[in-house]
Length: 390
Image 1 (cartoon, rainbow, N blue to C red):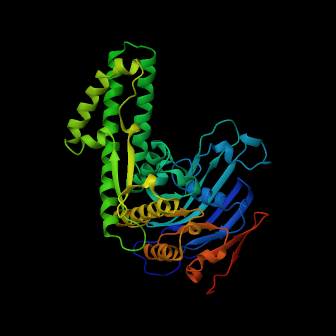
Image 2: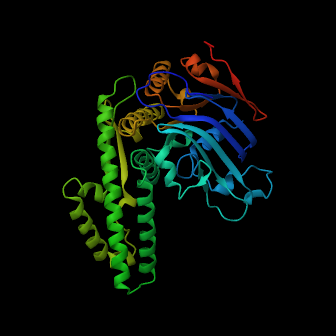
Image 3: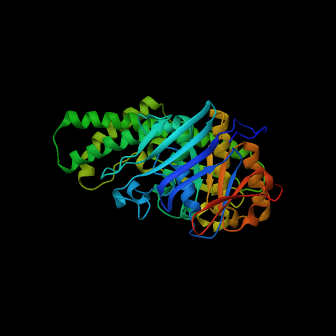
């Protein structure tokens, strides 16, 4: 279908055709869309979130559920957990139309296959160059109260939207980190190998921390400039390297971190943790209430997360010319009418293609004919329905 006309703040980007095969509960489904927000309604358990997950696989990473690829194979599909699944999409990007295909091949390997316009991609990172997605799901309701790893993953995914190479740097740091951990466990005396790994870790770690700090500053400015009923969030990064970069050059931080790693080898052999970007944490505060997000109500935590995602969309639009795909699972039910309507208006203003789910069609009345609506049935059929103004 052709993109809809309009005058959004940024160039419209979105999925215009989605096809899934042997994906979760869907044996095969083809969905035609345009660039307006997509609203999926229906009872719990019929597969609405599965469609959001399918869209999330059009971006780098493990999808919004962080599932193993074998867990995504439809129950009852040929070859069982070693079977294949596929997600294909026609995508309207800032640089023109693009066909994306991704999935899993038959067999024991859980390696993800990615194709762009029919050609094999070098890696998932190629997806990040053309499309990014951020999401909010019910599982993230505990983001502020659980351990730091979830908050770190959440923030790093936001960084991907501005800096697609961020994922590669994190992966390279993790690879060197694990190799060094193995040397420490084995009580290796390979000094040159230690030094090579620590030099690699230092370079990647400082680049990771710098990218995080850059996004944090941009988000803070976007939040300050925002207006509306969503609470303003004050953000901070708590981490050794993020702190160092606030007081010394990147080159000095890299050298100091390399020396720290070398000095700490005996301590780590005795059980001390390795300092680095894998231990950083994101702190979020409700500015008006002057309290940590973890102490706010569930509703206010959800509102803070939405405010952050909207700020991310504005920042990414300003930097890359287009906002990310926004996947919002069961978000509307937790907002009052004022905030729901403000959210919908912001999505329309941004020009972001949002995919929203909910059980109650009336929650999306504020979108009316400015969105496209689909009813998802108990038999997993997805049927277009008219909005109130259509």
